[in-house]
Image 1 (cartoon, rainbow, N blue to C red):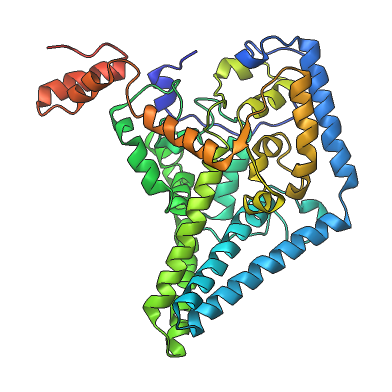
Image 2 (image 1 turned 30 degrees about the horizontal axis):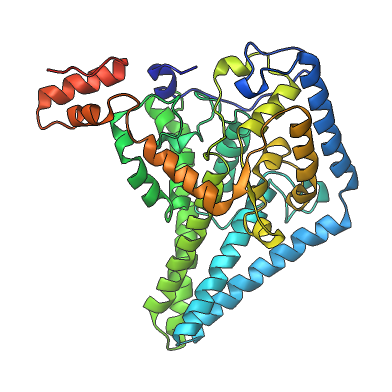
Amino acid sequence: MTLTTEATQTPVAAKKRTGVLPTTGSPLERPGEAAHLSDEQVQQLGAELDAIRDEIIADRGAADAAYIRRTIRVARGLDVGGRIALAFSKTKRGWIAGTGAIALAKVLENMEIGHNVLHGQWDWMRDPDIHSTTWEWDFVAPARGWQHTHNDIHHTWTNVLGKDRDVGYNILRVSESQPWQPRDVWNPVVNLFLSPFFEWGIASYDLEWDMVKAGVKSREDFNSDLGALKKKAIRQVAKDYIATPAAGLLVGNSFKRGLAGTVAANMIRNVWAHAVIFCGHFPDGVEVFTEEMIDGETRGDWYIRQMLGSANLSGSKLFHILTGNLSHQIEHHCFPDLPSNRYIEVAPKLRAVCRKYDLPYTTGPLPKQLFQTWKKICQLALPDEKPWETIKAVYSPSKETRRRAKAAVKAGLPIPTA
């Protein structure tokens, strides 16, 4: 089913669901990959996944707490060590080592620590310093705003067109169910630019400027969020692009050397985060859903939507840590509040459930998933029908031809031939 142009272009005030989903019942429509399941089978699937979750919750303890505290110490140690190397070392190797250490620290802080702490995965420890309500991560996007758009909206309405604002982040066409617009021809260029500046793209996205334009979000709320972003951005810029280079200058090193190192470290982190996150949501095999598919959704149906709307990455244990265990994106979407270090043991159980109920479990190595994601983004830059004729018309030198072509695209009609 394809959504209408109006449904995808007009933002909706999507909110986090309140209450608990029913365990019995049936939605108006199930996804094609799950259409063969009966209501009873979906109910049983939900019960089995609830049991997996309960088992991990009952087993959480000192070893898990030690893991997250150790990871935080490692990340902070790498950050301090990298900044010292940039400040004092005057060799090329020292610059590379310092830049690499800061980049690795930022990857760990954002992916395995910040993202997961802000999901509430470690709230059970009752540690006020490692808690979803107090943590502020090393990312330009303020934590509270990100929690709203990511935790409350994206994880509630995963891949539901018209509700999940993360589908294309409002700037990319990532599904054939999204009607083509003239701007989509720039899909590859926009994504290429977004990658090294990903943290700034997310910060802008969290402001929900499109919802203000549509009249869904008030100007007062927007200004409040913008004020929070300005404060966070000033702090991040001062720490990374002023303090670290200045420290090098004080000991006789080059300001530009320290600045270049921190810029490079942030870009490395951004490219990595962009690749991991996009590979978890947009490669081949990941489905999008219509609002009909969530009308009457049960607990089991919600689990199915998370499994069909996510994709995993295969790799070593170290690789999983460096992705923040978002290489286990399917497990993360089914159990977003479980400690990330437990996803590796949950994965075989969840895969067995998919096999039992004849549901796909999309996974693959990073190069393969990244290629598929970029291929899709490039393919969807073109209109579905008569691509070159349509692009030629909407970007015609003739103002009247462009006007008529864009009006036809907006209305979903064939492009005028004359």
